[in-house]
Amino acid sequence: MQKGIRVIDRLEVRCVGEGPPLILVHGIQGNADAWTAVLPALADGFRCVMPNLPGRKLSPRWRPTDGPIESFYSLGHYAQILAELVDRHSDSGRWPVRIAGWSMGVSVILEYAQRFGLASVAGIALCSGTPKAASGALWFKSDTLEGIMGEAQRRAERLGLKDPADHEAVAWSWRSVFAADHVQILSTIRVPTLVVHGEQDDDCPVAHGQSIASGIPGAQWCPLPGVGHSVFGDSAVTVGQAMSQFFRG
Image (cartoon, rainbow, N blue to C red; front, side, top):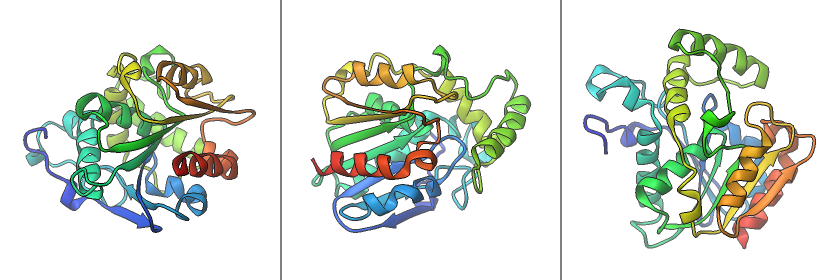
């Protein structure tokens, strides 16, 4: 864990359903509520574990005692949080968990795979993500934190996000996502993988999803015609069924 950071015990986590654990990681501006539309399909057979990452809803905000703010709101920190959630819900590796991520949640999962491996993971679903944001997944265009925060407010309105993440958390998270490169880790992933992506995604073009699917050996590719970045809002039934069938094997 990064020095000075310990928020897992103060993290807001929602749990719904019964069965094997399925950890659901939200996007850069969203929170655990992002999964609401697909919960009927997933909670019938899985215990859905939905964390609110730092800077979202009741989860912790950065404090000077937490260390550098750029580390607090970073993929590295989020991956560490995911690692601790996996450890807790797998009973320290005794029971394999499933993990799904949407948008930035995909980057968190890939960062987790890169740092910790997937030995305790039975399968992953990657929705609307990118292996390398700098290659054209420009959720935000500004080079300044202030500019990104302004864009974050407008983007939240455009995507219809309810109770979005703090704009400061979004800005620092975006800097971390934009600097990340997970292309090389794809070929090392050996767990069953489902890749879901809207073909009309303007925030993260479909080529990014195709790159993930082609880079991970044996990955299942699930393109969604006519669907944009908000796959749960635009195609909740289809996505929920695809994920449920995939995780049930």
